[in-house]
Amino acid sequence: MEPVAPNTANSIDIEVVDVTRENDNNGEVAEGKIKGGWKTAYILLVNQALATLAFFGVGVNLVLFLTRVLRQDSADAANAVSMWTGTVYIFSLLGAFLSDSYWGRYLTCTIFQLFFVLGLGLLSLTSWLFLIKPIGCGDEHTICMEPTSWGVRLFYMSIYMVAFGYGGHQPTLATFGADQFDDKTIKNNNSREAFFSYFYFALNVGSLFSNTVLVYYEDSGMWTMGFGVSLVSAVVALISFLAGHRRYRYVQACGNPIIRVIQVFVATARKWKVRPAKGGQLYEVDGFESAIKGSRKIKYTKEFRFMDKAATLTKQGSEPENPWRLCTVTQVEEAKCVLRMIPVWLCTIIYSVVFTQMASLFVEQGDVMNNEIGKFHLPAATMSVFDIFSVLLCTGLYRNILVPLAGKLSGNPKGLSELQRMGVGLIIGMLAMFAAGVTEFERLRRVTPGEKASSLSIFCQIPQYVLVGASEVFMYVGQLEFFNGQAPDGIKSFGSSLCMASISFGNYFSSIMVKLVMVMTARDGEPGWIPNNLNVGHMDRFFFLIGALTALDLVLYVFCARWYKGYEVDETEDIERLEDNETINRV
Image (cartoon, rainbow, N blue to C red; front, side, top):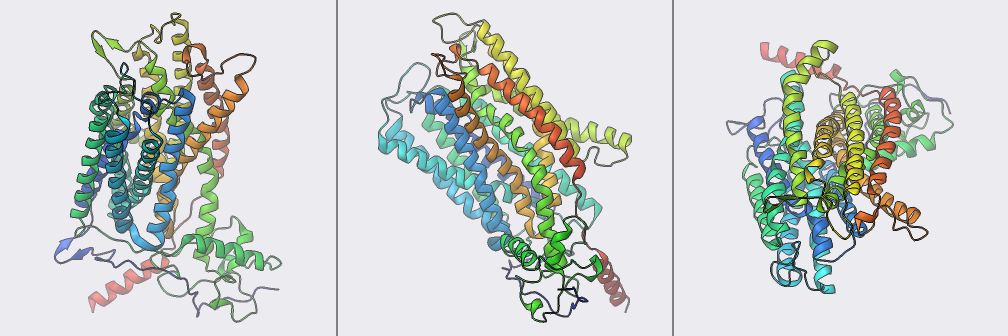
């Protein structure tokens, strides 16, 4: 079949769910008060800090809780933490889908935070009533009683409720914060970009308390108190979030993006033998708005030209009423945007394998090092405070020194592009793994037979934690800005969730790697690289392996980053609308 000239008189009936706007995108004024802006963004940053404090109050010492209280082996505990952390961030995809499609950002954040609070409450009760027996057990000296099967079931139910709540809430909150700034002005665009840096800054401020005070009490056997503090923090976070509901700037949900993307591929398949029309002849609706409610029109791009068949009109006059046969240019470009982002996203998964080692193997490594400072016993998980300080310091240095300097040298006001920053993050993450491998190699050299801990000071872990923290500023902040900025209006939360999903798949991949390494290296009487007694293993080789894989991934990432091209919003009709408004105002 041959394409025919476009008929833009008809529009595709795409099912959407509207979220009531309390203010429009331009004026943002209702009831005499300005909606959105930094005042509401600060509320969301406080919410992020408190919620993160609560989350890391559970996660930072989870590997030691599993080994000391539930009596799991080191490899099993590391895998359990990786699986749990992966599940946390896989729920981010669910939260993004619900917020983009049906509930909107505000309602999605509220519902998932309720589950977060309920999970922490159940965790506090379970540890108190069933697991911490006798009271104060689970430190380095007092052994807990064998846990009951009922207590273990409730424990896993509670931590996965925590995973569900925090995972679904975090990426949606990031996008909701960006929504507080209308991106039609350069000033607000800069504010949106700055918000993501401050968002990650708030995340680390929240985790600072968990990684210092809470981790000390939990390491001393006061697990229930630690979980209780996390519960209180989550409750305060929820209350503060709800208190700002009258001042938030709301953006309507845009309907089911999965259905829209599937429609493009179905329409393309049905017209496989049709020659795609040229860009100017493809189908698009008339008017200022696209057929996707709440989403601006997107300019046509030449990549993935085979998908243009979905927007190519044929002689069948009934096509415009059937989105499974004919899609608009904006809908096709939305699907193209998803395809462009996937290769870049896949290259970030290996970095998340690097990142997840802090919550598992770094802690186990520190637990068998010399962590005595006089008479004070330093909990191994406390070392992650150097990661936090590194993030806080590097965030300030990046925004105040590196961006202006790089901007002058490159002519780019952003300093480095998001893709360049992510590449730098991969390089620093690779160096962090090699540093961890060297530390473990030196730790094994200083092991005294019959002793649990090596004589090597735990402070030798500082370089690997600092390097991971520096890499986070480049990689994760860059990811948040990149995927949110490159995602069209209808899938903004999906873009933010890709960053969290990267962490999720990185944890799953790390768990698979540990299992494969243990199977392949535990032969001929050898205990394997990561045995229960790390002093007879070779965890250094595992760190070097991750570093080598990161180096290979970096090469692939460079090719993907050079290939990537972003989308552009069609602002022609917006300009015409502004001109019309100015004419009306003159009259």
